[in-house]
Length: 168
Image 1 (spheres, rainbow, N blue to C red):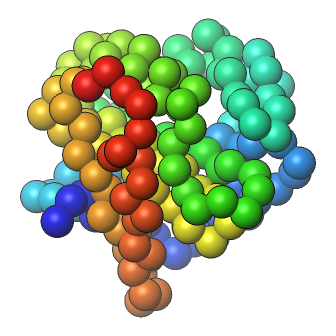
Image 2 (cartoon, rainbow, N blue to C red):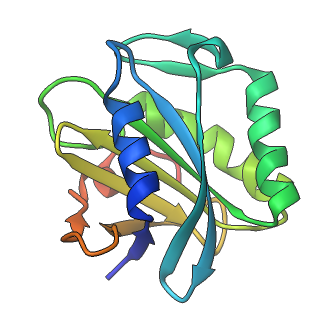
């Protein structure tokens, strides 16, 4: 089935507004707690333009300083970390080759720094999303099946990212 990510409606609305804003790709991080196959979002951090080394419509590069702040935020709260970014254009949501390369490098680091807490990566495009979750190790992602937001209908993942280029 896959992982379900549950997002409170107010945080989901903030996330949607942030990810759809501007011409360039946008990024946010969230904190989550786990219950079985469900990750419950408990906090949201919207990443500002000044926190990037590079931000274009097709690529993001978070500064080392902001990366450290985000990891410390999750560590101090004893939470799992969730990233969410948006792709521009009319395609269905799927991690790009550069996203896979970045995840190959970042997930093992976060896994180690957060003492084996799960990590989730979400990508949004138009009205679709996809996601991967690392619960058992930094080399073993599993699909995110859906986003559940309060009384709203579940948003089902495209599932396209499990076929992409990666080294897992």
